[in-house]
Length: 189
View 1 (cartoon, helix red, strand yellow):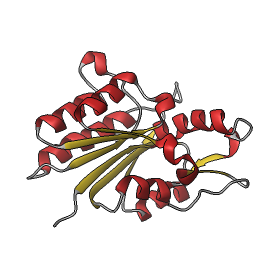
View 2 (cartoon, helix red, strand yellow):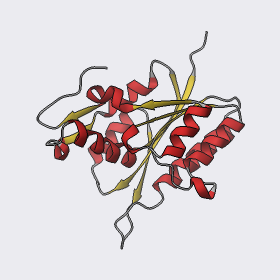
View 3 (spheres, one colour):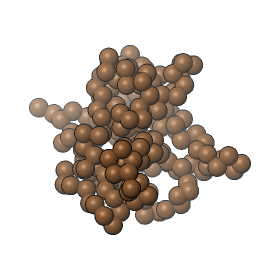
View 4 (cartoon, one colour):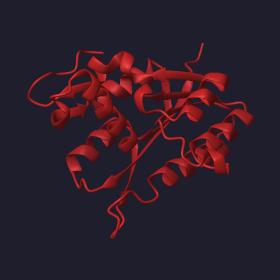
């Protein structure tokens, strides 16, 4: 029997920022050293399935080539976006991920599984955003999974995933997918 084929779409900023909130709850004095263990998180969501496609978008700075190289070493296609000149905020990171999701749904001959790492439900009320892409996937008979930190997940995204696919709270794997720099290492997956 063939392994399930999954397509991973990773919103790095959202996973990190909401992970900091989870850290604040569990290890309140260690948020400055909070880090995501990328390969452990990747392996945790893959669960011995075949990765058909993996995409991550993030913003620079950080212009940290080592950070982006780690994702490339995992086989993840990385797209980096410059921050806004005046706002210094992210510009088009979510849209880059959503476009990659839409293209993947259109380009695959048979439905597979979308594994989305984000808690961002922005645009839901306007009929756009990650939930809209998940709706398109479901309409085309794709399976969907959302992996995020429950502490910062948009309630509409969570509800949609629970009704139409699978929702996973990363808090259950906190010690495996995170570490505190120079204090606590991630436990093996």
